[in-house]
Each structure stands twice: as structure tokens, then as C-alpha cells.
Image (cartoon, rainbow, N blue to C red; front, side, top):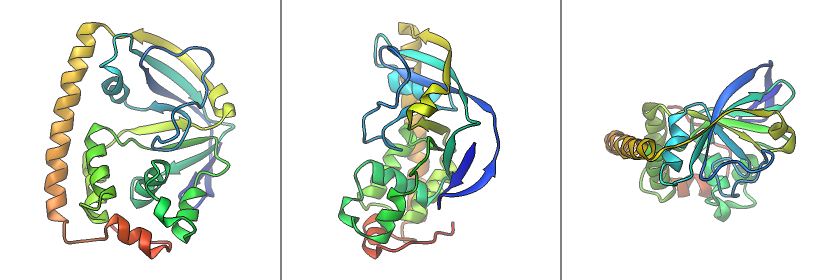
Length: 230
């Protein structure tokens, strides 16, 4: 496994298998493939997470929802591990189409090239709690300081995204479980509770840091590589 971080330079070589989870609205049909919609956190791919609860909260509204336990072999893959921070936020912004106004700038090119040549991307999940905060950052309502401190406080789980056929072939299904109506109702309640708690925590942090840092449009307007120190 060749591991890249942020700037795309190898930082270590290791091997191993990880156990991950994937939620599906109606079940996986055929071979595993990198065919999600394009505007996902880390681009088009097959998404898996380290936290079993996270995909459950995404699929609990669907009557035929299934949760999968998977194993992913990483030893022969090129990986990008995006640490929690401003690079992570900008990487998500790029893949959600939020950086188009900054095309042809240095910062846009750097973020666009971050995962070039990688089979799998690893990074934190913009879950129900974080999505609200991230969206506020993109809308220019909070600064990068507020965003990064929220990221740290919310303790997000990680997601692994298989971006190539090679990566998908390294994934095996260990278990498939169809959710009962009782389970789906339970996960709906847990999702709503987590979302409310996360929003309250993020609101507190955003108030604390509302006068510190830069806004999303300011970062794009600078158009240059940036440094962030939390």
C-alpha cells in the first residue's frame, strides 16, 4: 500500500485488511463498483465507513435497506489519507461543486490534484451532525476556525472510498443484513438525537470563534496555497 497525505507525497508503506460497513437502500446488485453519484464527499466511488451506525442513519428510511459488513485489503493500493482540517473541508467542497468560482487558481488545482492516481481515499465523514456545519461554512456563515474546531469536537468517524475498479476488487462482503421495521425506527430516533446534539455543540463552537479566521469566499478569492493552525 502506498499512502499519500495532503500534498500527495508518500509517507509510509504498510499492508493490512480493514473491516468496514456499507449501507444500501435496496441491496448490492452485481459486483462492487465505484458508481456512486458524482457529487459525494470524495467524488464518485464505493463508500464504506468505520462506524456501523453512520450508514444505518442514512438508509433507515428505506423499507428494503441493508447493511453490509465488508473487508477491504489495502496492501496493493495507492491511498490518500486526508486528515481532519481545512484540506478535508476544501476537498469536500471541490467534490460537491462548491469551488467552481475559483477555477484556474492555484488552490483549485492543488485540491483537484489531491487524489490523482489514488485507488482509495480515506477521510472523515460529513455525517448528519457535521453536514449542517459544513454547509454553513460553504454559505459564508462561519469561518474556517469555527469549522475546524467543530470538526475536532464532533469526533467524526472515517470513511473509505474505493475510487477504482482495482480497489473495488479488493473488497469482500462478510455479512448482509436487511433491517426490520423496528430497527429502522430505532435508527431514525438515534439519527435525530445525534443531529440535534451535534447542531447544539457546533452552534456553541461557532459562536466562540465567529470573529476569528477566514470565510470560504475569502479563501477562494486568495487563490493561493494556505496554512491553517488550529
